Length: 556
Image (cartoon, rainbow, N blue to C red; front, side):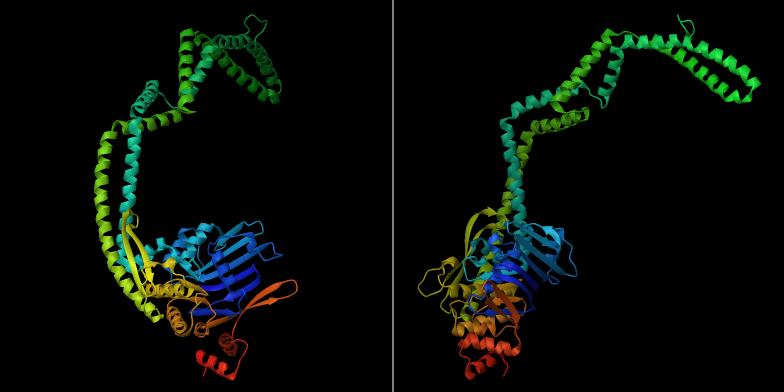
């Protein structure tokens, strides 16, 4: 249910704050007062097309906000939460801003949303109907959904099963088609994959071996220099050909400090430090000598290392930057090779699965068609009853089912057709010429649907064009009945409809020298009498007209 609607700087509206109630809400006013603009704003708020021309002259942006009570719509609550928005006490907050550049931003529960998300949510919130060709009833592709909603849970469950079978069949067919395409390249791919798998497998790669090989290569390639470094270090420590080595110098210092420490104990720490250093450097000199002796000049090993590193670089250049990536490529290619090697077996499996799924789909579609046929007959009877109540006693209405190739919705094309006058052939709803007839047919079908399941908030934008007399009264009765289970927002020029409203808003356009303003005010009991009287008799508000208005409102 729509609780509040806020409109700022939209078209000729500078600012409006509307609070609607449950049941029947009517909006009236003089022609051109801006009534339909309010419905245009609501349509935009629910995902309609945005444009800079919608912004009020002199403003830099238009702002629209609405609050909906969805406490009685658990499916919608689930949808909103699945889209990532958190509800507050079953209230849904939606806003949209249109900038002068034409760009618009949407928000749901204060968080950014896409227009597609807004439109998806909006389909659950409001059913908009106008007097023009954009009514949902005139979109033939929607008729099958309406009939299935009318058909009840059994029909809807079977339709879901049909959709599952259809999508499974499409998946199987796609895989088989891909397999057939692969088969045309099978020989080439087999050769390629076999070569790649063999090349990587023969290399016997190990994770991390490239780093180890590079380290060993540096040692082997620089063996002579490493031997020289070790020899020079050992020679400096031991003395070698020099007059005095490091160790000999330390030995001299050590003897000197030992003598000094006996004379002054404060030299003891220096003595211990030199002694420790002497021991460590003696070990270093021995280790360097052993290291020098261990170094071998291996030209054959150097060649082998370079060949192995070249192989690794080649594989990494072709299959991945690291050995891990090369091995991952190997696993993927091996899987492709296995799949190609067993493609004939998989093809046979797929063909069998496709045939089985096709039979299942056809069986379910046949059963679905039978349920739709029965539902269509009941829907025809109910809708014709509603049309008679609306003064279209001579009308004929039918639900046409035409066989078609199976889709996710079954193997039927559904279209509502009608003949409004005797002798005329049944024709699509879009062929109805009269705006009044469209209005009545639409209301008849919606009333029929409402008998099966409660509809969302319904908005009627001047659908009473071309309607009057008894038909107008019946139209008002239908809307009043619908409002018992559905919130109704109705823009009307008919006093018969306006008088049945539970809340009545008056829309007025005020033009000044440089600007135009639209105001909307809820009417009191006496104000409603005056407005209904105006709708009946224009500006000539006689006592008779006023009394008639009171009678229509039930105030006598």
